[in-house]
Length: 419
Ligand SMILES: NC(=O)NCCC(=O)O
Image (cartoon, rainbow, N blue to C red; front, side, top):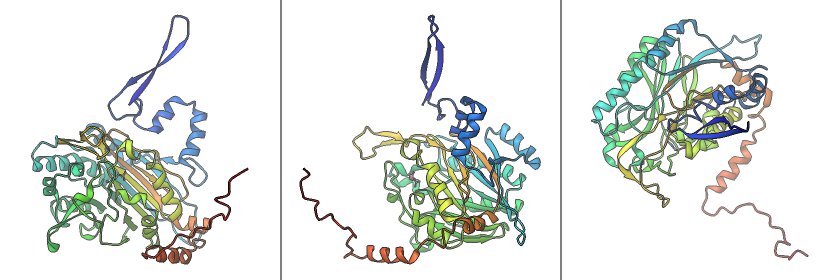
């Protein structure tokens, strides 16, 4: 990381110097948004934001001041987490009332070093999350989603099996911890955990548990696509999920969960859309060097193509492990993944998106969204109607057979030498 600094030489020449920073910031700014805001004239910033973040119902994304959130603000200062709140509107309809839901995303770093006792590490994460979840509840959040495998360090880079100890049944300790908040705040909570399936040979899965607003367990979804990229050696621990593409009908709307690496698979996003999702959450753990340029694009594209909202959540900070490991790329061994860059945000079906949470601080993002926007965008763009699903169903049916041959028409003059 680098921070630029302007110095004026004796001859009046302005020299721009860069200073290395190692705090997970972008040249000293906690997000791209704040970097641009601080460095562009207001009229330029407005234009850049229009293009970068899009417009919602013809205007810039609204910030919202949540009156009931005064206490959330105090809690965010006391516990040092980023708190941001926005609103996506929809057009007024004559035959349907607005369907506004308040949705929250939490991003956080781990608390204790990964050398601490597993129990202490887990309990410390609970302690850290408690005030953030309370702030979400007190702010009237209806649906809250936590980050991928929130109840443990993201230890899958190590390939060491001892981290499996963190795995819990769907109705285990972390679910019980969250059920109390769900009940207290009438809130649906999505809890991505490392799951141990006791009834099927104690196997391990990467799973999101959906807790209903009565504190009940509505169901679970297991991560569909497991990475084998860089240090993300997750297939050492668990395999591809077997729960399909469930959409959970909650009192606040139809929701689904596309866990982390699944966001690189457009058909995965599509399947949740075909099953009727209105909000798809993407709880993630990913690092700057690997995926940061992809991060805002993939979620936003999914929201546009499938006419639903997407909530993207990423971890924060650098997690260092006791024993070094390699990435299998010939580079030196190391003991961490690199920086988890936070940057949680929402994308809307009309191509607008919120500014992101901080790149290097814990955070709570609260956003109101009128779910009527989903159908309004389907009516406007007609993506479902024009999708030609039967064409692709046929291609995929052929492609998945061993005797598939690609449809390539070669130029008969391919071998002819040019004059
Ligand atoms: N957790 C996870 O699936 N990470 C993979 C890396 C990425 O998709 O950016």
